[in-house]
Structures are given as structure tokens and as C-alpha cells.
Image (cartoon, rainbow, N blue to C red; front, side, top):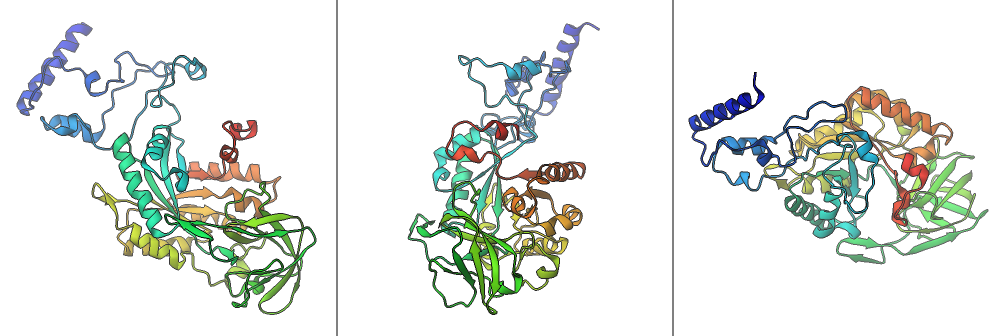
Length: 436
């Protein structure tokens, strides 16, 4: 059959169908390229197969309804980028020809960006979205409710300006244990500003206490968990450091337990030196309070802290285009299937039945229950900071590959944290980070 005749006949049939549907302003010369300007009938992928035109359901529905403002300004939709014609095109670099941010092949890999004071304004969020941000992470550990509400409002505005959908992930505090080093020195628009706590020298003796009355000092550090001494025994190692510290900044230190003084006090010796500042967390290595099955039964820290439940309830009341605003809840220190099921019931009670649960794997106990966690959760995050403390470093690379493969086989999304830590102070990643 003549290709030209077939194409003309197809347009006549389309015009006839449009007339029957009473579509206004239809022209027989209407080309699919006008609806998808980036599509060309001759486009092929790097295997040589033709690329079919793709239309979002919103835009396609607007077309069938005739005169509709969506034809000019479609509502938020997921972008489907064009594939390059050959793999060699991906490796070409011409500084005089800027790369279109819509032309990418890594649509299966998403970028989750934590929203903080440096990127909360609408203009910065617009740039983040245009440069590949797929999901915004709202970290409930830092910032008050007003800060997080403002983050969501600004993100909604930035999504409207860019006409791209961006998911929202709420990361919980969970059963985290903190050192009570005092109150923030100030708050700036809902974000706490922490000062320096203390300097720690190698060999220094430190007492971790849960007596509830002690104030923070150089050698006595109050902790938030009342039964902390029950979790420890002589020889245990405890990592104390600034929240989200990588271990390279000199803001975390490893302590070794030397004696259990009484039901509240644990005497430790420092194995290194550090400057503690900011929000300070406590993690028991190898047999963490959040990681040892025999001990976990005696830990009465809920998987959702009171702060978590309060903030999720408030943030869950915000809607966008009639849909739930919170797409994901990242469950910190998830270690059993039962915990995930209890959180799902909580979300249902708050009217967030469509919100997906992402289990954060952070301890050895979570690894022991990984199969059941993977079945119960909607996705998995490997918290490589804490998990890297709890697992020997020489075993971690193969462990990571195995767990990611398991998630892929089950069709569950998998995320890895701390992928490019050097980006905070360098415009280029290290070679190891780039290959990671």
C-alpha cells in the first residue's frame, strides 16, 4: 500500500471521527507533532526501533473534549523524555550545544532531594525540578511544622510553574536516641540553629546517663531513652555524633563501654577525638537498641514517635488537585513486618490510605527480617550511614548488591542514601562516587 495514500486516508478518518465527536477547531492538517512537538515520525531508539507518540492521559482527554484550556496549558504530568538515537550520542559532549534537560535516558533512576533552608524557596525548587529532582524529602527530625508546611506549599507552586509532578516523602524520626545537649541557640523561620556542644579527646572518660535530671557537660551526656543502660554491656561500642554526619567531618566519635555504673549511668571511654555540635544522635554498634532481637523486646520506643504522628496528621491535610499530598512515608529503623502494618493502620486512620510506606533498612535486625519487610513495605531505603556502622565495611558492597537485586526481583522501588556526599563542598564527585 502507498505510504502517502495510507497517511492521507488516516487523516481523513481522524477528521471524520473528530466531526462525529463535535471537536471544535479541528483541522485535517493537524499533526501529532503539534501535540508532542518533540516527537518525530522518523524517531528511533538506539536499537533502531521506531518510537511511538505518547500523550499524557490529561492532554489526550482534553483533545477529545474539544475546546479546552488544557490544550494550551496541560495540568501537571509526568515527563516522558526522548531517547537518543544511539548510545554514542549520550557520550558526545559539545560545550556550544547545551544538553536539553528533557533529553535523558535514566528515567528509571529518580533523585530524592532533602528540603532544607538552602533550597526551600520557590526559585531554587524550580531549578531543582528542572535539573532532575523527582521527589522532595521532608525530614521531620529537623524543623518545626510551620517550616515543613511552607516547604510543601513552595513545592506545589514550583511544580505548577514547571508543570512537572514531584513526589513528597516524609521521613520520620522513629525510635532514634539523642543526646540532650541543650536547646538550639536560635530559630530561623522554623529551622533550629545549633551551637557547639563540646570537644572530645581520645581516651577521655564520658558518662552517658538517663537519670532525667543531669545537664549536659564535657564528661556527662544525658540521653533521651530512660532504659538506655539496660541495652549496654561492657565492651559494646557506641557511635555518638551529629545527625546525618558521614564520619569524615570530625563531628562523630566512637565510645567503648567500660562499666555499667547503675540503672541510669554507663561509663565509656572515647576511642577518638571529635567536635560535637548540632543535633547529636546515639547508635549502639552491632547490637543497637534498634537492632538486637533479644534487646528490642525490652525497648518501648514506638516506630512512630509522638512528633511523627502529630506532623503526619497535619501535613496529610494538605491536598493538591484533590489528591493526597504525602506520597511516601519513610519509616526510620523499620525492623519487623508488624511495625509496617501498624503504621499502615495509622495512615489509614488519618485518611492517607494512598500513601506508600518505604522501609528504611538501618540495622542488622532489619537485615534478619528483610524478606518479610520487603513483602510488607511498598519500597526500601538503604540507610548506608547507620547500616555502614552496623555491618563490617568489607561485607557492605556485596550486601548492598544483594539487597538491591532482591528489591528488583520483587518489583519494589529501592533507594540508597549518601550517594554523593562530596557535593556539599565540591562541584565534582570523586571517581568512586561517580561509579557508585
